[in-house]
Image (tube, rainbow, N blue to C red):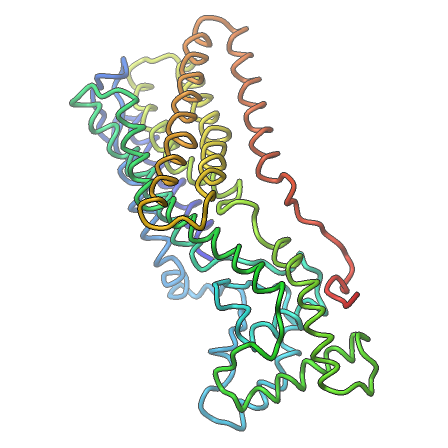
Length: 412
């Protein structure tokens, strides 16, 4: 709930810092790399501001009287001590799900092994289209924070180093590759195994194998599932509970793989996620260059600088992340030292080399763009092509199929 709001406020903060730097209110420094003074405050403020807001924004909003979306979480909204009240809540669970606008599934390897969660998903899809269900891995937040932190730390370190030492781009690529390798690629492989196990489990799904933390609840859930199957017309109204449960098993094996696949992003990070990750790494650095405005640097320099940053955010970061994940998700049965061979392979061939090549292409185009308007137009065209390619790759063959029907999870 906090990610987008925290990102928006963070960008507002660094934008204010950029204007303050350009006006001379905040300090700027001579750089060994740039021919004009650059700021540091935008870059240094971005990550700490984002992390603080990410974790505490809702607390501050609550103190100010702001209330977020209404959420029904069964563990906290159904009484856990009073058996009578708890029973009433359980019996009305279908009504809660029917009244909900959307369902967010915090998916883990045990989600479809639990009786209650399977029943909740089936009940929700019985009255809502698939597009109203969003599946998010419990590892997603950790992976997103790791990616943001790695690229942001690299961007924070770069200007500090450049002010005092002339360090080339290759050193930066090595640093960010090591950071990503240590924190990100192994987690991406774990998520890929999770998705693989999910499909294996569903192929042989049966509700009687599901775990129920309170066994006395099992007859209640079975009865609710039987009522659901009869209400949907999957079995006759006079069908036995056993026949209804068998129909539910067949429905789950047929519909849940499509429902979950439609609700999951093709890659660990969506295209929007990669844009935010790239923006955190590059926008503050670009804004710090605004300090040169106070020293008479031509506006054309900043326009081309911004174009360079856009190309990296819209194309280079998404494409390298996608390629890194494609290569890093291979040979999932490999463990131990052999797994780290895949990690290194994915980082070198999927991230470091393509990233270096695309960045060098961007730098050369930027140099030519300074010389003529025609080359500036070419640079803009390359930006557009890179953005379109990234969007197509991320939306690719796993694009969601939307339907206005409320019976997308019906039995065949």
